[in-house]
Image (cartoon, rainbow, N blue to C red):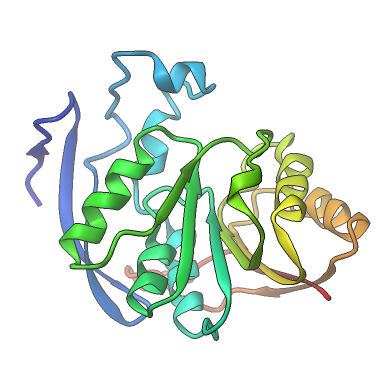
Length: 224
């Protein structure tokens, strides 16, 4: 697919049709991992390096796996949060299903990409929050279902993420994390157990679009 210039910033994008959870979505993403634009230093001040800047805007296998999982989840009556959403593929699927969904990410560009992808797919706007897992956000509230994909990518994240999830969990909550075996799963399990969450994990049996098996695990935590 040819690259497109984004008139609003100095980076290139592409728009492609992806099958997510058995449904087709038009997804606007960055062209590749070489894209970078932070003229005002907003991302840098948030701790996002030039090397990691484009990662939010790419379609990752774990995000596609999570989008398939949420297509089959019961959502009626549940308030749902997607953490570290990036392009928010799972949120798009849940929004199409009529869920009460909030998406969140640290990256300052994630909200704009989410808004455009909602528009491309003729979906209503959803609540989006920009912020880190170490920040207090009392206005965010609590959720019955919290989901995320590939969020355990650094060693210092298990404690931060577990604390963030706990602050925004209802007394009765389900948490689903898709992890591509990053190596920080055991530490996160210990943190969640210490906060009173029961844990179950399964090896993912899904396949990527290329036909290659997805190598990762689905982590499920429950409380209440």
